[in-house]
Image (cartoon, rainbow, N blue to C red):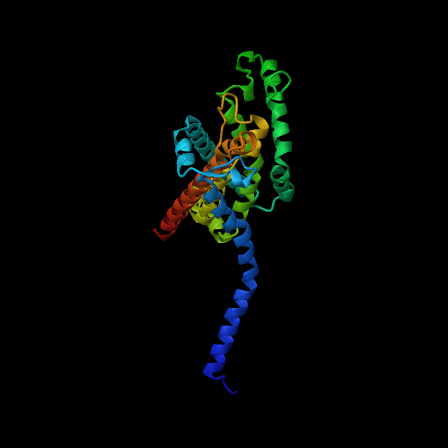
Length: 303
């Protein structure tokens, strides 16, 4: 069989590379139009004072929007809230998602049904989740307060969403309920990468659930942990819907998040430039925290 000449191989290689670029060109164009141009425009807008309506009214103000954002006491409150929200939701969702995935890993009768039940909240609209929890937290006829009264624990009843001490935790619980099923799916997929022989060996050695979780499962799922944590970080920083539906940032700004500040600045106060500065801040924090987590995971895997 006659071998192709080196020139023919080179032309074939070039044609292959060119065809690859042609296939990804539409994606690059779409990303440029709808992502990168949008990011550039938001970054540019953050240096202007503008009401968001008439472009000719835009006034350049340099870094003043960022200065206002840094000096605003509400910004610090929003950052503290989102950090508490992030640490609480990501940690609990990871733990519950992994435990549920482990419990449903054996092909027991009805395991698919229970997976579907746990995943249902993920498929529901946030409006439905919020309305459900508003019914739970309702101060007079809500299930929680009614249960406490029936148990003779009237002193523990609260106006859950109207109390600055409990409102943020009420939002955290609602978020955990909604998204734990998604973490379960990630961990079920991750568990398929661990050989069944490892689990069988652990069972033969007498390792229980917690020992197996600590010594085999947890270190074997670092890539899954990274995915879950990065998605959790980005999701926490841009959280808006559940907060706005339950408390609208109240009571007394006790549940303000960066996203609710952004909405209020743009939609309620017509401060498009200031809102753009908040957006840039959210993007930078998301990228930095995600990069740190990915870097930490890489070092952990190489160790």
